Length: 258
Ligand code: CO8
Image 1 (cartoon, rainbow, N blue to C red):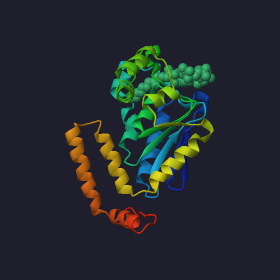
Image 2: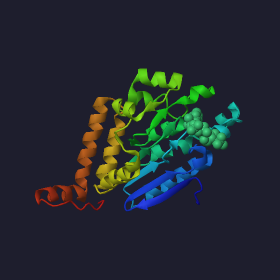
Image 3: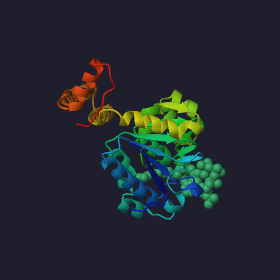
């Protein structure tokens, strides 16, 4: 598939995906979401890739779903199409870690896309918001659900009901982003972080991601049981021997994904 709305490059073992509709502040239209889904499936299947970074431009990660594309749709249209849910949720099906590197606006579907990633690194210029209420609608890809889990009911309710934006400092304080970096270092820092993950034992990484996500989907007792079983399972890998041998021999582990 030739891409017109995203740019994909490989930086060693990291797939870097840039949303690239600068004239529309990376508004997420269906063509872009199809391309993003395709790139994610390919990166997930590529044995040479250990982690993925999704980023936008300096001005916008993404200013939301494409309002001009949505505007003429009827209820029947969006309901029949299940308005592109499968494409929007592609990122949640990826088994390798996905980092959102957010500078500028992450609004509406842009904020929702960032929240579907495994964690968010924010530039000091980042602005998050769910302004769908100003368009006479509401979030449709997790804005009322994931944002509430990240920042708590009060802030999520206020943001969803008023459409106000949250700056990077507030996003960090309230747990929406893992940390803030200067805007001109964002992409390099995200790639370096992804690279650090890509150097680790791939099955330990995959199992860790799965286990952390369980924390959102099950009870504490079930989650802890799942974690323990995954921990046990990793003793079936050669990378467990390599990791522990390397520690004892005071050398850097060479993980081989086996
Ligand atoms: N859709 C389409 N075009 C957009 C969008 C968008 N979301 N955002 C910006 N653009 C376009 C503008 O129309 C403008 O184009 P043009 O030059 O042709 O007029 C260009 O980008 C630049 O934008 P502005 O001139 O407005 O730039 P400013 O710097 O003045 O303002 C803002 C930047 C504040 C980001 C402003 O553009 C804005 O408010 N944008 C809309 C934000 C918004 O409401 N987002 C939510 C959209 S709804 C949504 O995301 C629902 C998701 C549901 C997903 C469900 C899937 C299952």
